[in-house]
Image 1 (cartoon, helix red, strand yellow):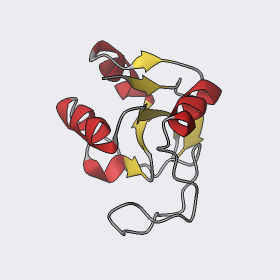
Image 2 (cartoon, helix red, strand yellow; image 1 turned 90 degrees about the horizontal axis):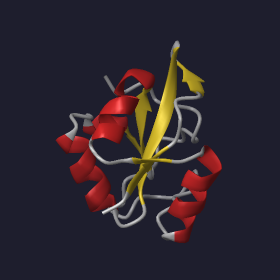
Image 3 (cartoon, helix red, strand yellow; image 1 turned 180 degrees about the horizontal axis):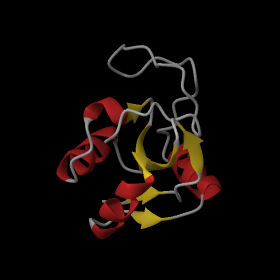
Image 4 (tube, one colour; image 1 turned 60 degrees about the vertical axis):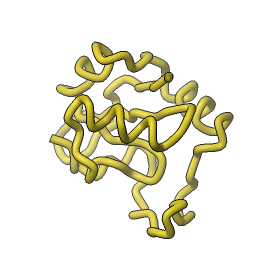
Length: 107
């Protein structure tokens, strides 16, 4: 199980945000997010948006700190990258937010 998180450098909704991803599966990602108390509504296509005050929670729980480019490289290499406009495996449509454009949905 490996989860990755980039630094909280993405501005949005008056906060700075990080992206949390898995290089194994979405199931692993959802389970990890639930374990650290991140609401499902913070999931965006292929990652969770985490506000800066939740960054250390993810790291303490085992997420590996990487730069944003490395995070995308690992996500893409695992075949889990969902580009903007591509439907999710469950048939739901993405909301259109790109990495770096957090939804502001995580507490």
